[in-house]
Amino acid sequence: MQRFAHFSLFCAYLHPIMKRNIAIFASGSGSNAENVIRYFKNNRLLAVQLVVSNKIDAFVLERAQRLDVPSVVFSKKEWESGHEILELLATYNIDFIVLAGFLLRISDSLLHVYPDKIINIHPSLLPKFGGKGMYGDKVHEAVVASGETESGITIHYINEHYDEGGVIYQATCPVLSIDTPADVAAKVHALEYAHYPRIIEEVFSAAAAIE
Ligand code: GAR
Image (cartoon, rainbow, N blue to C red; front, side):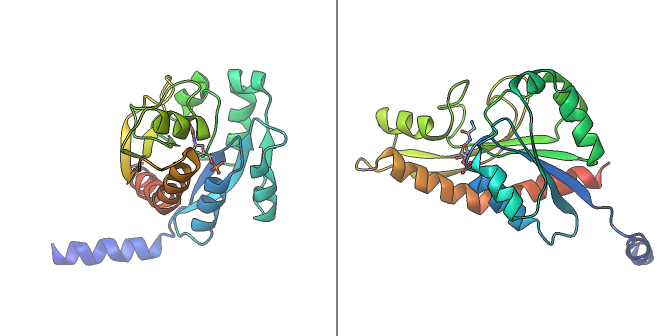
């Protein structure tokens, strides 16, 4: 047994680890995208190779340029079919996809090629305050309007329905009676920055290990 352990360590040493590539899909400011890109800058196993958006004026594109990550924008029609996007992902050998404030539905063609390899972060405790039209500040406004005493983040797999894929991880924060939507947004963003990169690393490292 002991000997076997030594032998597998020896094999791991001889075979260089194959790096896996991540693409980030984002529609807006991209503060989570930037946080994820920075986290994986010198990672042994995972690297962010590409940012893909649906908005020509999304600030995430500027962030990507500053961080030296190539970015591409596709039209709504191209997102609906998914074919041009799949070609681009194949060109960059993308293994996994991270959604970071991406607001369009992921096409069935992408879901088919990347089963359980696309994850999203949502700024509430799903199933509360999820679904079509629930994104960004709209979520925090709804949380405050409904008098919730806590909110948080949900990291989940993507499936064909908005915000309904299997939950991977949730973290909570208190919502005080004096909190404004901006206060809740600040608490939720802090949770996102603290947990999203780490969970991405855990989920995709585990997926890579069983491939
Ligand atoms: C984040 O809070 C993210 O959870 C949310 O959009 C924000 C994007 O901020 N995503 C959704 O609402 C998805 N339904 P960012 O562009 O600064 O990362």
